[in-house]
Image (tube, rainbow, N blue to C red; front, side):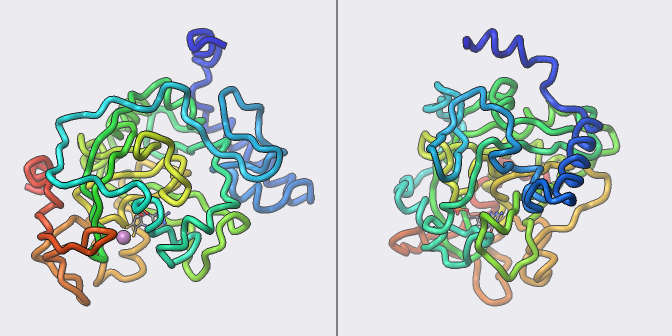
Length: 328
Ligand SMILES: Nc1nc2c(c(=O)[nH]1)N[C@H]1C(S)=C(S)[C@@H](COP(=O)(O)O)O[C@H]1N2
Ligand SMILES: [Mo]
């Protein structure tokens, strides 16, 4: 079907109204209770669904006869034009490195093993719940976002709080564009994000998942904040947070929540996963501040993966001139 006809057909149901969502959730929960669906399907319904409950796909997904289905961006999404406003004066990290050294505790805490543990994770179909203080709450199909939001490539520095760092070309939507689309209400002050979690698909244990994070509305609407669906000119691999993850390059990596299932606009400041677990070690803002040591290590330098070359960490990870206005 041509893109134009597809748009015409789908325009009036861009976002399922909240009422429809509630009805559908209640139905799935009721079905699970009656033994008609596995409980995991009902619990995980804000993210991907079990094959039996999904509607037919309208666009290409990797659909092997067995095994998980993976989200595929619309044809023509990659390569997206690189935005030259964001330049980094060091070499890109090799794709092989960035996709095999990961933090994604829902799978394992062993960074070099995450990519081997994601095999059961299904990312298509994928829906995101938009909730809270917005004019247009509801469930949105990820593929619909591609019709409403522009994609671009940006090379950003990436700095984990553990003091390793990389340089990555992300492809994604500026989060400001999503906010314009869903229209925050005047009382909205914060954006809370939640990752997908399904015990059946994610073998990691020992933490109280789903993972959750938050930004102020001003941080979320900042020009640097990206919702990434791609990396190195293709879809995100699952270990990197497929099919959509947050990228805030002036903050430590832990803010960059993966596999987004829910975005909620709130008036009160939401809690965040790591500052709940260890408030003395991980601040709510988690901005990159080289002169503020972690209680157990210095943040003054960082180790470039994979070789471990030590370089100075810059205030706000090199984005001080762009984010200074947020913290004046
Ligand atoms: N859902 C979820 N998101 C997450 C994490 C996680 O464990 N679970 N780890 C965070 C941390 S600590 C880092 S450093 C980055 C790592 O992203 P990468 O694996 O793509 O480099 O993801 C962040 N997002
Ligand atoms: Mo991290």
